[in-house]
Image (cartoon, rainbow, N blue to C red):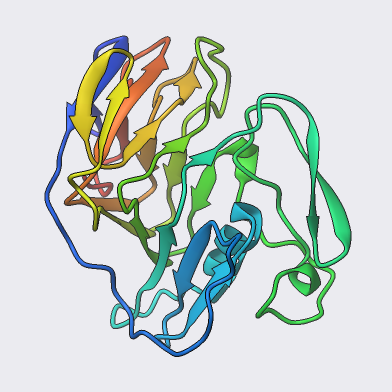
Length: 241
């Protein structure tokens, strides 16, 4: 079959995988901002800290490579939640609007610390979800925290949490698997990928067009779809989970 449907319940409450794994990269000297919400280790082993997830994710997307010998890692330092109303964020003096249910906003490269002065935007949040594509290689370290799109029951196109396509490779780990929390009344440990809601399949993670997801830690929790694949939807014979 060309289409594999995984976790096909209409509503996936909680699928727990809590295997410990270590964050990639080499520690370099430098103070961590008290407001930092994420840490990015680029493919050269350099660490950067960002005060907004938009900046951290856009830097990671731009810095990532398709070289199989390299990996770019983004590590959560707090919960990453979508805004549930229109709001603005400020990045290096520039204001950006974050729409309802979006995890972040595509930023111009000149407004992301560590990138060049180009006015072109980094395509990191297509449709409001995390966009992993073009053969690039990423690791997301949940570090015991959640990524929550907070869509509730609002099923819509592109309502998934993460979209992995175009031969991209995404590894999901959790370096703090013993962090305790309650999700929809269910006690669990470790970080959670949650809050996606879609009408066309893939509430949590949509893997297509040769995308590959390797998950050794964390949980897929409280995502839903009107079709199949409430937790994960794998589309195409060359796509893998």
